[in-house]
Length: 397
Image 1 (cartoon, rainbow, N blue to C red):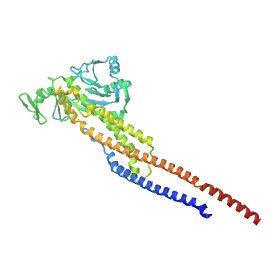
Image 2: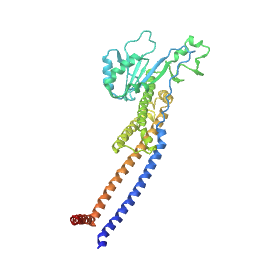
Image 3: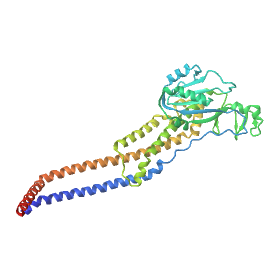
Image 4: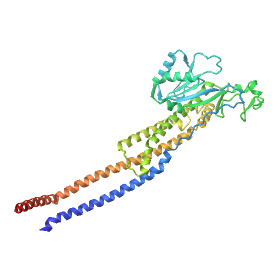
């Protein structure tokens, strides 16, 4: 009789033992995942905190040179410019006029304007180049005039960037004209002797026929099309400031997820949901898509392929601003962040799958217990104990 009562219970205990064996193996699997997770996080935390390479900055003109210097400054203020409406707004101010850049029909969408009126004692023309990707380059404009223009175009921007980031990631360079090197007062400088039609400047003999980048400064030749050459330099500077904005965004994202690496290193429980991980991945893929879409980061624009002189100027400034190196490091850091988020996603997915497996195991165990009659046995046993207790209480009474 006792065998009939306890046999189902023995079967149930054997089944539950198997369940606990499964549980222990599942815990071992989770520990393996956690170990891999910690190793990746620990090795990656220091990488995420690395600062991006510094951009080359314009140097001050040496004291012994007496030539006039001017300033060119580039900003990236938004994701996109509505060039048509910008042109209308600026022209409506009646202080500026549109400029047609010759032989630029095949170039990417841009807008060039200049002030209608010259300033007192102005010896260098002022130009502004707007690029459709949200960048603007000012040639020889004062800070006050730059702020006026930036305020004027703000309503035609899409996804305007924060002012502090825009200013921080701006590029500033000095430029001048080669003709000033050949003036008599400069020729007589003992540091810059003249040899026939050449002038020695900063260790090199220069002619006045070729625009070039010398020691972080641009020098224009009168023999070339300066407006087209300004476009080439502006194109490279606009690319650099645009990359600077995305580098800053990635830097901020790395700081945002740095606590995850610290928590993993200390063995703390991760308080992240799968929805948040997917959101982070979406941000990272957006950053990758923007850089991949902007092919100029990886290759010279088609516009310069049959314009050798302009390509040389563009390439000089492209190299000077370290755009290729910065793009490579940007992609490396981006890939590292994506790998970390993918591991987190896999970990949380496996955790949810394990939870579902346990729910299924529990339901199966419940069904087996019911089939074996364990609950009926417990119910009858409880009923017998209650009757026995009642009878004992009556007898004692």
